[in-house]
Length: 155
Image 1 (cartoon, rainbow, N blue to C red):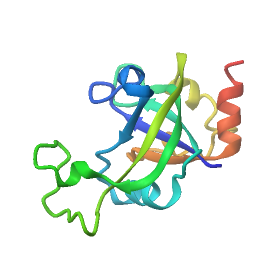
Image 2 (spheres, helix red, strand yellow):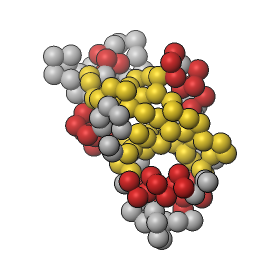
Image 3 (spheres, rainbow, N blue to C red):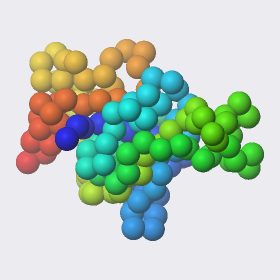
Image 4 (cartoon, rainbow, N blue to C red):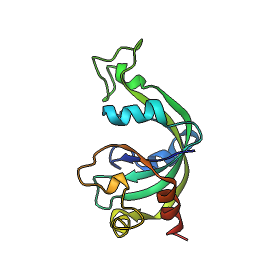
């Protein structure tokens, strides 16, 4: 099993939106960065777990845990002219963009704020990608040590 961090701006799609979705499940669509796309296409697998992270908001941080229900598959929003994620260069026979299905396992309340994570970036979380300056990827790997440390910091 691998671990991930999925970032979303809460104004676009929040953990509350996921909680209200049918079966607390959604396709994690709209990723339009090749590096993140490659992770979704090649590395994120059914059964993996991920942190749901709110970004670009007043209080960024980890707001939930999601389970991957379906590994990478073609993101149909790329070929839907009505979608905000439409890509006119996308070809359904050779998909350019991929998504995965995620299900909310649990909300984390209170959230694990970015400042709380940063308090450990010199030691336990020194290599965590979300803490690196300039990292804008919406999907990043999380090591098993980082995963355990973050969850254990809330007990």
